[in-house]
Length: 158
Image (cartoon, rainbow, N blue to C red; front, side, top):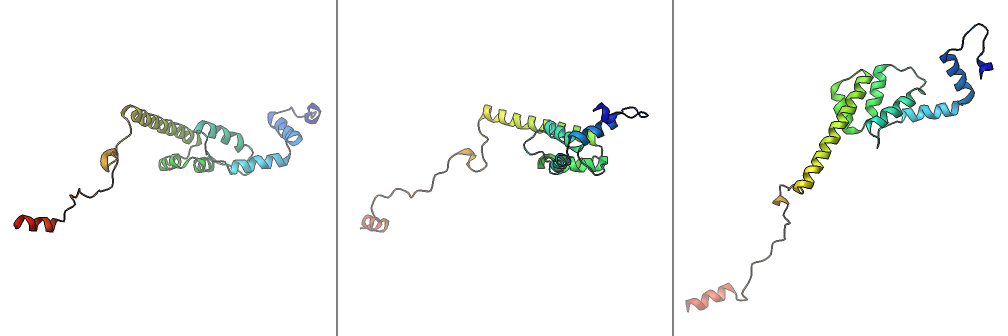
């Protein structure tokens, strides 16, 4: 590798090394596959920490120009719908700020969900508005003595 990089007049910089390394050991087909993976990246079942790690890893393979606002839009659009709605309301254009807000929002949502489950196990299931959790039974006819009410009334009058 050193022979590939050596130039009598130019020192070996990180950029030169990186370019030569990718050229030699990282074929275009792999680079293209990583770029496609980045473009299709969504949070899915990942937590925000995992999503941001994957995002940061794959963004380096994106060959088009990237500015911070575009990076924010791409990141936001890949978030889970409930997080995306909340982040969108904040109108953040700074990528580090957006990432931090997403982490905080997810942590708060998970904590609220955990507390709700904990309350349900302590108190039991939350009663519903219809019947307050009691099982409804179908309407049954009132007990009949076997006599017809009109014939019973006529015998009492006689």
